[in-house]
Image 1 (cartoon, helix red, strand yellow):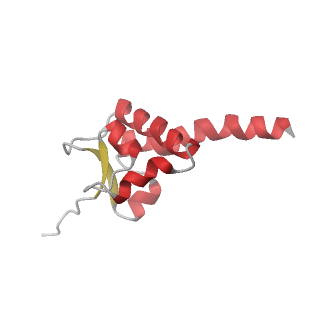
Image 2 (tube, helix red, strand yellow):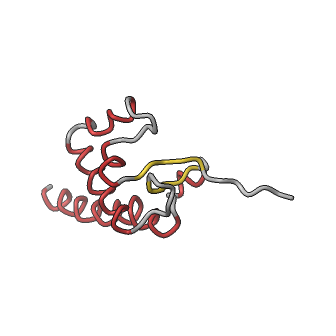
Length: 101
């Protein structure tokens, strides 16, 4: 039983880092956000960096370990930022669509 739990934990940490930090640091969005036409940016509008993506991921893990209380600021901040976004200086925005002319 403990072996399964250890395997799940050792598989979850790297997989979640790749999905929630590495992919947005490279492409600016996750596959799910891409479909929803959303992207993660720095609050000044610049591209997401590896450092800010890593801080965002670490803070999101902290939000999960506090039973989701870190996500509550989304209801009270103007940009709908959770604690993980506030810590990393990021926000989720609608992707700019290229106009066809």
